[in-house]
Amino acid sequence: MNDHAIRHDWTTSEILALFERPLNDLLFEAQSVHRRHHRANEVQVSTLLSIKTGGCPEDCKYCPQSVHYDTGLDAHALLPLDDVVSAAEKARDAGATRFCMGAAWRSPTNSQARKVGEMVAAVKATGMETCVTLGMLTAEQAAELADAGLDYYNHNLDTSPDYYAEIITSRVYQDRLDTLANVRAAGINVCCGGIVGMGETRRDRAGLLRELANLAEHPESVPINNLVQVEGTPVHGIAPLDPLELVRCIAVARILMPKSVVRLSAGRTDLSPEAQALCFMAGAGSIFCGDQLLTTPNPAFDEDMAMFGDLGIKASAGKTAAA
Ligand code: SAM
Ligand code: DTB
Ligand code: SF4
Image (tube, rainbow, N blue to C red; front, top):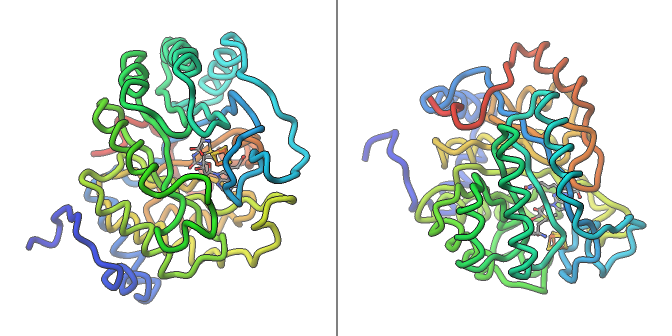
């Protein structure tokens, strides 16, 4: 086998062995893989908007939007189209190249999916790439969103199959894989990753990355979220993940899925600029910019642009990020 082959047959022990390498060796390999497939010193910038907030029937233990936990969130119904378009224009003018719209649904109805399709078409008309995350999707809904011009669908595996039931009981792992298959079949780019720092073991983190890397096709985009702890959720108060373990996760994801864009997603407010710099060294090629993620805070746009300046990083366009 050639060293640079794209593999889909990783074992947990092989992945754990990557995690256990000396940090410098791991970072050196991850950055070398990164430079073979992506432009060095370029990071793509996306902005998030919660188009429907709170009141979600699912019981995801990390999520402030679940009806099962009292998090004091201000819920709102699906936003009007005009509000979504003005938020997209604002994000584009600030320098984002992709606009990601999230809805707190278990799965959309056909009429909800159609309305989101209208938002996708309108946001695309602003010149931005589009991404939506709406929960489980049928094949028909995926095809309709593809027709509306959707570039990416985000649907995370969240954690390893072994740890999954500790975090979510209202839907199973296979439901997530089915949605990913529907998105893939519709020809939409897949954005799929997970969350770390929820009390899982390193073996679980390796198990999540194994599931992602062994999909028939690697997701084009792999968000690694560092848990944002929200008061009222069951995982609030858990010991935070060592930032170097997050760096290792990103590096391992980079090595396992060389062509994918690995995203340093939620949880940057808890990371020092030095830790974020190591995440970029490990191969992170995308971040969310803007004051807010979906419902929780994110570093200010200007602060991120200053960090890019300090690190000599250029904000890049998404589709052109791969060399
Ligand atoms: N309801 C849809 C779903 O779950 O598929 C879409 C929106 S949901 C908020 C999108 C993703 O955000 C979740 O899959 C999860 O990975 C991530 N997420 C939610 N709350 C988070 C938190 N507190 N910290 C980190 N990531 C979080
Ligand atoms: C993803 O993997 N992370 C984003 C996006 N996909 C939708 C969401 C992060 C949400 C963080 C918690 C919040 O702001 O509600
Ligand atoms: Fe609902 Fe999505 Fe939050 Fe789970 S992560 S509770 S499905 S909004």
